[in-house]
Image 1 (cartoon, rainbow, N blue to C red):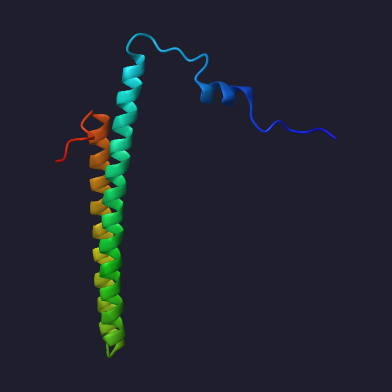
Image 2: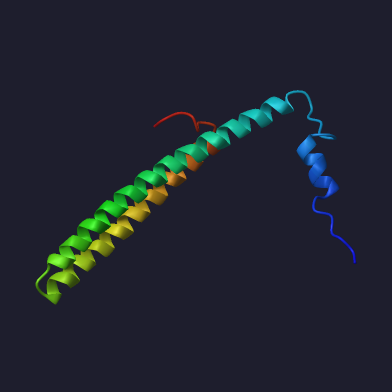
Length: 113
């Protein structure tokens, strides 16, 4: 019976940093890029958490309105309004996330705007 090696030599080399040499300021450039990536990731996460919280609150309000409705016409109107608001909210959120990503790519991930 043969056994499969769990880790490759390449993975071990990359983890240890052996054999990785960066020219002159390459280390600083890598550190700066990593910092910018983490800042943009954290900002995206904060934005998405806020968005999900807002959407859950709105969805709860809509559910309460539907349960309080007396006829099908009201339910249809509420559902239609919910769909329009939901699509608008998701579209706006995608714009915000794209702005964060664009700002990060352009070197301004840490700046609030």
